[in-house]
Image (cartoon, rainbow, N blue to C red; front, side, top):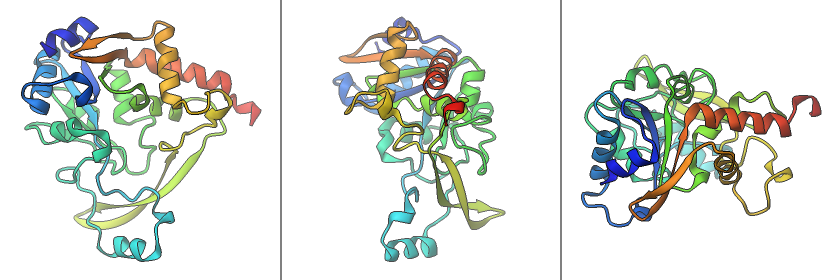
Length: 268
C-alpha cells in the first residue's frame, strides 16, 4: 500500500529518492520502520536507490558554547567519527538510522552532514564527501542527487526538514552568507584527528531570512510552500500523512533563484 501511494505521488522506478519521514503522521504502519524501507524499495524497484541524511548522534557542532569541563572532556576522550558505526543524529528521526544499518547501505564521510544510501547508486552518491568541503555544497551527495535527477520525498514530514534546500543555500550566488566553524574528530590513517570545519549555518539559517519570511515561520517551510505554489512538486496523502514529492533539480533551481533575487551579492 505504501509503495502504491508513493508511486501515485510520482516516485519513479529507478530513481534515487531522498526521503524524510515523520512516522507518527502516517498513522499505524504494520511492520514499522522496516516496512517503510521495504515499501520504498518496492516503489523505486531494483534499479532505484534510497537516500537519507544521517548526521551524527554525538557531533560537536556548537562546542565553543559548551562549559569548559564538557569541552575539555570531549577533546580528550571523544571517539572519532566512523561512517561504519557512528550512530545517526536522533533529530533526523528513526528511518535514517534504519537505512544506515540496512545490509548493503553505504554512508558518506562527512561527520556533520553524512548521508546514507541503499541501492545501485550508493557508491556514486556517497563518495567522495571530503572533510574540507562545505558539507552540503558542490561535490557532495546532495549535488550528486541533483546530478542524477533524483527526487525528494517528504513522507508525512514537515517541509522545514527539506535538507536539499541547504544545497541551494550553499551554491547560490547570494550573500552575505552566514557561516559557522566547528571542530570534529575524524579518522585519518587509523588515528583520531581533530579537524576544523566551516560551512553555512544550517541550524539558524545561512541568510537573514527575517527580511522576507514572516516571524514564527520556518524559512524552509516558507520556501517549500512557495515551490509547491509555483508548481514545483506534488502533494498527496500517504497513509494518514500529507506528503510531498519534489524533483531535486527543479527544487534547487527554484530555491537558488529565490535566494539570488532577494540576497544579491552586490547589495552586501
